[in-house]
Structures are given as structure tokens and as C-alpha cells.
Image (tube, rainbow, N blue to C red; front, side):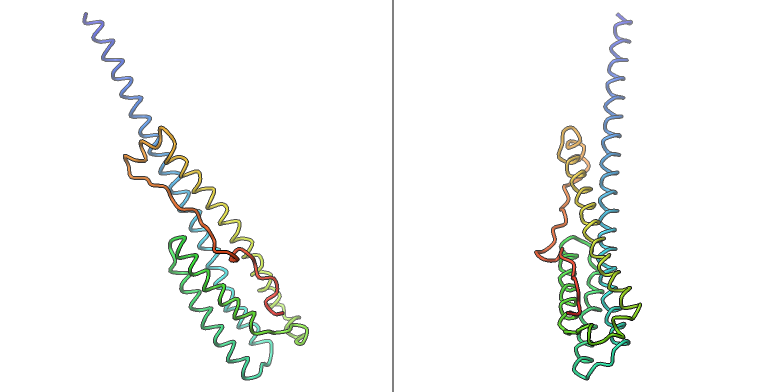
Length: 199
């Protein structure tokens, strides 16, 4: 009888240990995917911030390279103000909705910049300016980087959400308060990179 009780005790202890290991493994897995989502989100923010930072640099480069008439100086000042506001909004954005709103401000600054209606062909010294060409390339590269980082973030969110919703990890997610996360959904048109801001 004592032998049978010992055997039952070992079985119960083995099952309890297995359950504890499953809980620990599931919790650690949830923490890992949650941190991955946060890391990928930070990369999205960095890419957007880079774009917001480039706009004022483009404005300064154009202003330094070309003698504009007074009306153009006024337009440039307005665009710079808009770009700085967009830059600050992007720096303080912390959720997909806030980044989307700040992105709209950046888009507005880009539109204002395009609205300067500068014809590069009329300003060969601007076209030949190394800084100008470099910044234009950087802006185009940044647009591509934004798309890539958003895609990576959305994949990380998908993996996280699957773990939170699938059995048996959904039980642990419910116990420890893990909830599904929102994917990044850009507003219509914001994923299109500006081609040539000066035509």
C-alpha cells in the first residue's frame, strides 16, 4: 500500500512539475514576442523620425543653394515651421495612431515643400549641389525603410497575436494580462514615397 502511495505521489509531483514548466515556458514565450513587438515598433518610429528630420535639412539645403525671390522665402519659412512641427509630433508619437497622425503632418510638410513649385532645371547650381542630391536620395531611401520597418512590425504583431489567441498559450495570456496588439495601418496614400519634390 505504501509503495502504491509513493508511486501516486511521484506521478502527482511529475504532473505538477510538468505544468509548472509549461506555465514558465508559455509565459517566457509571451514575454519574448511582446518585447519583439516593442523592438519592431521602435524601429518604425525611428524610420518615421528620420523622414521628419530630413525635411528641414532639404529646406535648408535648397534655401542655401538658390537665390529665391521674397515670396519663395516666405513659403520656405512656412514649410520649415510645418516641418519642425511635424518633427516634434513624430518625436512624441508613441502609438500607431499617434504615428499615423504625425505622419500626416509630415505628409503636409512634404506637400508644402512640393508646393514651392521649384523647377530644378532652372537652377543648375541646385541640381549639381551634392548635399541636395544626397538628401533627395536619403529621403527616397527612408521611404523604403519605413515600408520595410512597418512590414516587419506587422509580422511581429501577427506572431504575438497568434500566441495570445492560440491554445494553450491563450490561457497563460489571459491569466497574465497579455492582450492582442494593433497592427500598423497607414492612411491611404501615406505609403507612397514622394518621387520628385521639385517638379
